Every structure is written in structure tokens, then in C-alpha cells.
Image (tube, rainbow, N blue to C red; front, side, top):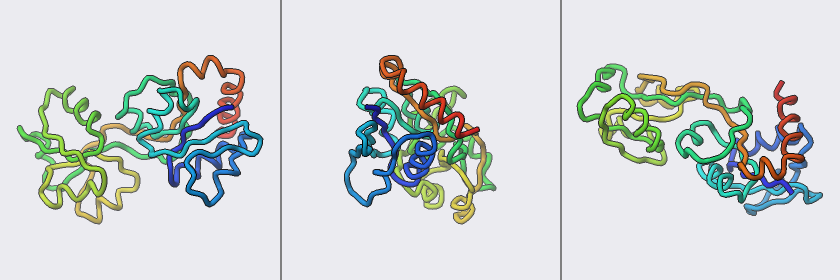
Length: 208
């Protein structure tokens, strides 16, 4: 049996469609259920539905053989696993954003950055030799500059519509090409190679 860790929500739906195209029975994922552990009809596949940030945790631990996670999550988590395929879904960028008239704020001696990407923010600004105050938030990140809680935010930007609606703009793109990636547990990649490698090959063909 191959076990997948899939992120809940829209990405899980897109992932199910993609996996189905390369022969994985994902019918169970379309069922209206609150179950978090689901198995395909033939018992060949098992699916864990988890929060997006938890996908790398399950895969690294070997609880799941494969997982689908955004590149932003992989950068933030820094887990020991194999990133085997770019699934080219959900393309966005990881950006520093704030008020358009305050681009000079990035040179402040005491910059306040609101983000859910705490580890990434530390790494990005440490590489520049800059000390910052990180304000961890888990939702409505754009509200931080609006209310004065932070000077800027570090967050993923897809269309920019939420930023625009709140009078904010992208001040700097930190990482581009943020897409969903297929990741594998290092041990599973070797011990279950006979099942995993054909699956990866099938996904490549579908993507092409």
C-alpha cells in the first residue's frame, strides 16, 4: 500500500484529479465525509488529509510515503525528504508587501515583519545581515500593516487582489515559482521504489 499525505481543501481536490489521471484510484476523496484517513476501493492506496503545513511532517516521519505540499511550505519546514516532482499547480510568489509609499521601510533599523513563515523570514533577513522583529500570524496577514501592527508582511501572493483591496503592494519578490510539489519519504523511496517510480513517471507524462 502507498500512503499519501494530502493538504485539505482546494489543493487536495486538484491533487486527486492529477493522481486519478495517472491511474491512482482517488474516488474515495470525492465522498462527503469527515474522515481524515481514507482508503481506495482496492486497498492499494491510503490518503491522510492534513493541514498543508503538516504534510512534510508526516512524510519525513515515514507515516506517509508520498505527499503533496507547496514549495513555500517546504522552504518553511526544511524537512528531510525528497522533493521529486514539480506538479505546476497553484503558482504564486513569496513576497514582502506593504504600503507603496513606504518602500524605504525595508531599510529601517527595526523592521517589524508579520508572517506565518517565521523560519523563512529569519533566514531571508539573516542572509542580508538585518535584524527584524517577527510577528507570527496565521490568517489575515494583510491586516498587520493596515492596523500598524507591522511595517510589512511576508506572504504568498497569487493574484495580488487582497493586497490591492487593502492598499498594499508587493515591495519585493523573495521566492518565485512557488508551486505544489510531490515529496517522498527517503526510506519509502527506496523500499517501495517498484510502486513509487512508475507513479512518478505517470505523473510526469500527465504534466507534459
